[in-house]
Image (cartoon, rainbow, N blue to C red; front, top):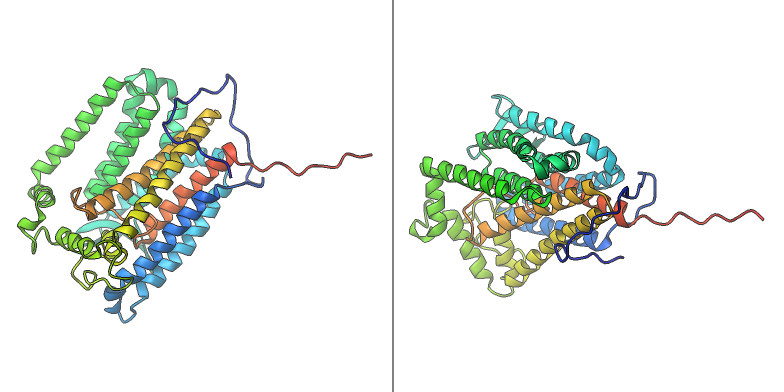
Length: 403
């Protein structure tokens, strides 16, 4: 297994003129980054264990204490299949599909808001009922957005670096998607999508002044949204001091902090959480990390943070190597995947620790939810494909010369 240069450790060297990335067809034997595969598998398995533990009380109300675990296990098998499928499609195919997938995702976001089609849960219209499962388009549109942006940054690389329109066009497109997300509402997905978009544009060479002006404008819009809605301001104030109203607006955060505090260094033991017994809302989704920290302690929580840090670091390393080999599309796509996984993990864990305001974001690859698991599996599959095409193709079998 080859080593990966740490991201941003040194300037990326431009590929020689006329250089192109290695062409690897979907039929070629590929060597994948087994360290990355192992870490992703570890995160998924640990997620299954924690979903089984954290959801047992909630699922017991339906008569099947492990009901949610079995559903998540089925989603995990489906996600593994989707991940493998993503690794089989060449990057040229994904690049061509990018705009169409984003169009599909945007259409699905609009359908969510149609009465009779969208399904409301806890005051949010984020799901489309599809028989026994619910599709959450906001999870998929984040991955589709990265696919589109990577292609755009390659097609319009000169405009992005030299013209305001090159920066303005993707921002307008993402703003339309953000409006649909806010209408659900899904503030967490909006923050992740915009942060990923802005960071990719910055990495692609957008002039610093234009970038700074737009960041300031977007932050101002979000600040205005917070001030204009009393319940949003209440969330912000609750995050600052949750103990001011521990049985009202601060209930979720205080219960999460109690869970983490009970875990101490090594935890109270797997399956022994008290906070999951209807004290901590959304214990198997948004606050799974709090239950994990209660049962496995600071050590378990630290291991999870290290695993997500590794995935993010590896994604940026793959992106650097792709750019150095002349594959700009693969490079930007890898950066985007690293940002998606890293930002979602950072925000979810930050919320659980009381470092960030409460957002409806799951812990990637771990929290209960089929749409989130499938979307992140697609993202990891894309990352593995970029890595295989730019640095890990196996040598063709040697042919014996005729005597």
